[in-house]
Length: 288
Image (cartoon, rainbow, N blue to C red; front, side):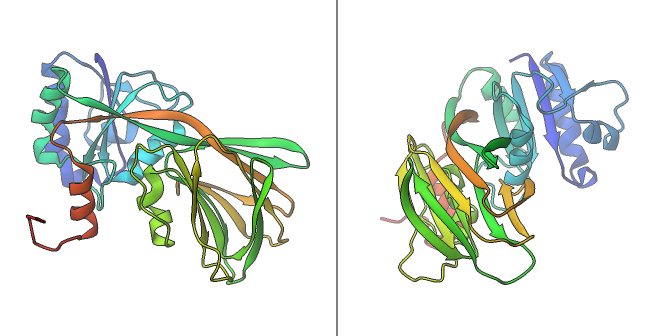
């Protein structure tokens, strides 16, 4: 791994020492360093290689922040052909699990090859309007269709592989990956799905019918959602990062997309992360 990028959207002034220590370490290891412009500006680094997500080819992206920062970078990537390593300076941190105090030690283990690859599936989203595909996106967590400013139910007609699933009268609908199962999906009452499972989760948001529940389907299925409400404030949102307005009769097609690779260290444990982030078990360290 020779070409290493640093991405962040934090208030860098609060973490200036951490950023400078990472830069010094990477230079010491003779890595070709790339920085997002805002990172370089706030760190007052004048001579640098600029990292533009989706345009600059690198071997490794160090993302300093929370999960939202990772989602922002991944959403801008055209071809996901690089590895990601998250340093958690945010809140929950399901994707970015390493605290900043461990970063130089962790990087040493990574450059020595002492890591595993955690491959996560993504969704490919195509927006169809008037029988033409007008937009294409990819999502690591989820795609959601929601009513915007007004508290009104909307009608969404969902099919799986061309076969009718349900007509939803609800505040919206979430189609999620297992990675995104602990994000918006969880808040809407959807299930937690182990992140490397091959599955797609469909979760209605506050459905009018109590009988309409989340459903988990295989990742080789294609979900199509027809917008059957003529409101001006129905939003299509990708990973909470990109948003556009939908029109009546628009169809959102969702299927398995490419995958993204995260570097994991041997001591990382998903179930431990769930206990810590969701407060399972309180202060009890030994469950049994």
